[in-house]
Length: 478
Image 1 (cartoon, one colour):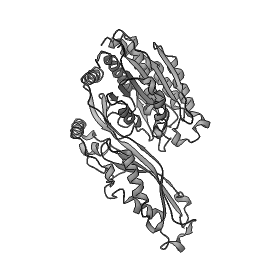
Image 2 (cartoon, helix red, strand yellow):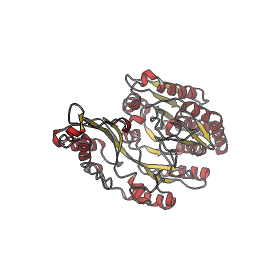
Image 3 (cartoon, helix red, strand yellow):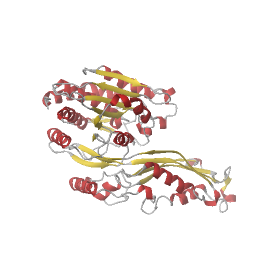
Image 4 (cartoon, one colour):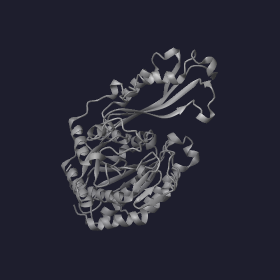
């Protein structure tokens, strides 16, 4: 390791203060919804505005031997590709590639932002920058470049780096496989993958994500008559589509405790992941499960501690995230409605096979419809989970040392309940690669919900850790 860490850290601190926070404030103002939430994303131009902002900023940075291009494919969102040659006195000759990944598309606004906050209005309170997309995941492109700059400014070394910033992650990354296929001949051997789109269990140390759940979703649509009928005249004879949906869902989820009943969605949790959850729960104590804003008297489905961690990282869970066919309560007449449709979101264990789960889910819902109703499960997607390979000794040492230098304590490991489809894809493409999956989505940061924030102080320390890892990777014999 040749990097002067004091110089690198000062460079990163200045970058966050002078460049990254101002650019992130500008980025937050752009309603760059992912294509799943903005079908006319081309016409609206918000994703292109976000790409333009990040691309122009990257092009302005003083990084040696860097090329930047926007990869465009027909009927796909663009991909920013930043290619940086190996650099420094310890730069490997003929070494592999390190991929640094992030995304710039965003989730919808959501309701419930507190007074003084709004999704497209950046607000700084202490070290917290509020607004949609700052933490998930707009900061990643800026932090990655700041870390690379710091390595070079601090006299360090790095191997060949490829920064990939996509624009469809919040839609399940449907455009990314085509982009990776187009890039396949240029990536070479991938030795290390860095992703800053994950989370942290607290803001006191560096957290490394060891697993991610997969995702299967789709729309369950039930129709029974061709038009609405007076509930007084039809009720009791014509079945309610909502009750039919309830019957169908009982095939998939046990209502009493939320247990998912699909065989393909159940896996044996590896013993070392159970031990990992137990260690994390012991460390965090009562904070092992981030307290949700329950209404008075309500509580979680499971007890705290390791069981809560495993429930949200290694066990399947079903959520109902959208509904069609129902009027608002204030506009509801006494009508037996002809149709009800629910959007289902099923998180599956890291090692479950998403295509198999999707097939079982569709078959289970569509088979033998009650009363001969018209039942379909459509608009479905399946994304893989990911279970990390064992950390190479050099990488474990680099991460642990960086954490001790920045936070005063060693690195910690834990699983995440979300999905980053790209990780599963890269794991299959490059089975020998090492992975550093981490991020800033800690307690209260509320990605996808109201009041999302980025803790800038934590993000700065994370950027410093990344610079050290990039420098350390050059001394490794492959």
